[in-house]
Structures are given as structure tokens and as C-alpha cells.
Amino acid sequence: MKKYVTSLMLCLLMLPLVAQTQGDTIYHFRFEPGNDGLYTAYRNNGTELSRLLACVVQNKEAILAGTVPIQVDGYCNSLDDETEARATARIRSNRVKSELITREGLTEACFTTRNHTSGGDYVTVRIVIPTSPSETGPEQQAETERLAAEAQRATAEQEAEQARLAAEKQQAEAERLRAEAEAQRIAAEQKAEQARQAAKQQRTEASHPAHDSYHLALRANLLRWATLTPDLGIEWRICPSWGLMVNGSWTSWTWDNNARRYALWEVSPELRWYLGKQKRGYLGLLYKVGQFNYKLCGTGRQGDLMGGGITGGYQLRLNRALSLDFNLGLGYLNADYEKYITIDGVRVRRGNKTKDWWGPINAGVTLVWKIF
Image 1 (cartoon, helix red, strand yellow):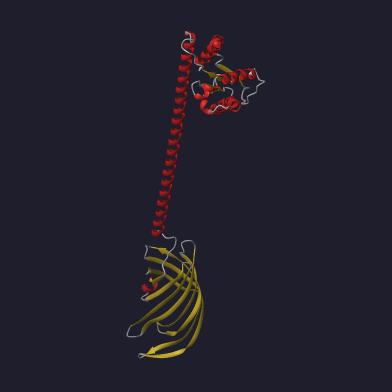
Image 2: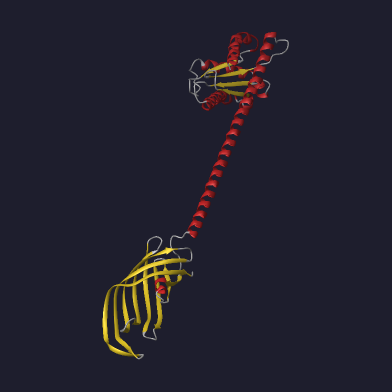
């Protein structure tokens, strides 16, 4: 660009010589820094415009025919942003061209325009007026050739600049597409990871449910079985928090030639409320009814029992199908029975009695088999 400014100054020095043979060919229009308005009163712009219009009038036919080109160069170096500076230079060039188009009827095809972001705040207009070979001297011929070469060089620079801007734009677009592809890849990976974590959570919940999710289970009180009293029950889990259970026991033993006897049957319905997140601890309401016949010594007792109370306990999970139920019931029992002795294998009644009992009424270590 410094070379371009130096050439421009040389053209200014040679302007008087050129004017003697082929008229004014270079015209300068000054602009205020950062401004794109063309003011005729600013720094001799009005005089330059008059000289330019006179030259255009003299060569109008040749200009419209395309044999006399008009080269317009706009400059702006008073703005920091290169894009704004180039846009301002373009507007300045258009200001000058519009004066020629509106006043003398020229068209855009009559101009060759270049815009620059360095060199100053002005617009130059060059009109190359060819002369006949007989009137053309060596200096004028050299100047014409120099101007033509400079125009070609400026055109090449402009094309190179346009190619550079196009390459930068293409590179920026490629970077944008790469960034979008990377963002999509990361989003897809995050989505896949979330799906994997959700599947893992589902597998964990399936293998370790938050609560015992059975609906029907069979029960056997191991303490009763240890006393040779078979005990079986069934439980229906209405929902995870509520269960309805019925237990039954029965046994009948005699020994010592029927002098000793141990017989019993009981039915114990119970309503349970399971507590906590895992639904393993519980509270319940128990009702008990049955009959008994005990003769473990000289006097036997035979009668009915009935009562109820509050139960509590905890289920220890063994595996998916089995649990141990530890429970204890506290409440009230009433027993109406008769006493008897045995004489020669015959029961002899010795009176009736009623007994009330407050305290433990039930205990168990129960094996629970979850059917489904």
C-alpha cells in the first residue's frame, strides 16, 4: 500500500505535464475522518468536482462507449474495524459516482471501482484519455501504460482479497459445522449414558426391591412345630402396607396308657400394617379362638379359649422366596374349662373354672414362603 501511495504522489507531480497534452486525468475528493458525506465546500472538493464534470462532458461519448474508462478508488483508514472501514470507503466511492450519474447521465458500467482500508480519507477518480499515436509522446505513453498496469494490479489484489474472505468464510462455516457435530455427539453420549443408568437402576430395583412385593404367602410357625404342634397359615398382602393373615394350629397326643394327654386347636386371624420404606416391620391386631385339653399330671383341664391383642414384629428377608417372621403378641385371653381326673380310664369331672390372662398371648419364629 505504501508503494501505491508513492505512485499516487508521482501521478500528482506529473499532473501538469499530462494536462498540457491530454487534459486532467486524476481528481481528488477529501472526506472528513469517519464520515462518508461528500461536501463541496470541504477542502476544495467543489473545484475538483467542476474540473471532473468538465472532463466528463468533453469525453462523454467515449466514456459511454466504453473506450475511456473511469477508475474510482475509495479510501478509509480512520476506522478501527476493517469491515466498517471498507463499507465507508464503498459509500464514499458511490457518493462521487452518483454526482456523475445524476448530472451527466453516466451508468455504473462506465466505472471501475476499488475500495481500500488504508491510505487516507479520500476518493480518487482517474480518467485515462487516449491520444492518437502521432500526438502521443514517450512520457504520455509511459504514463498510460503505467496506469493500465496499476489498474490490473489493483484488480488482482481485489480478487485476491475476495478469495481470502471467501476462504475465511468457508473455514468459519466448517468450524461451525464441526462444533455442531461435536455438540450433537456429546448430547448423544449423554443421552446414552442416561439410558444406561436408567436401565441399571431398573435392574437394581428388580433384584433389590424397596419392599417385599409378594401378594400371597404360606406360613409355618417354627416354635409351634418345635413343641410338636403343627402350625400353618396363609397371608394375603392387600397392598404393600396392609396384610390379612390366618394361622391355624392342631395337635393331639396321649401317652402312659392314656393317662397323659396334650391336645389343642387354635385359629388366629390377624390384620397387619407394614411400616417403613422396606415394609418389613409391622404392627397388627390379633384375634384368637380355640380349644384345649391338657393332662400332664393328676388333674386335667379341658375347655375353650378366646382373646385378642396387639402384635408387632419384623420380617428378615432370606432370599426372593423366603423370609423369617419374628413376632410377639400382647393382650387378653379368657379360658373357660373344667377339671377332671381319670379313674380306670374314665374321666371324672372335678368342677368348672374361668381364667383371665393379660400379657403375652402369642409368639413365633415363622418361616414365610412367598408364592407370588
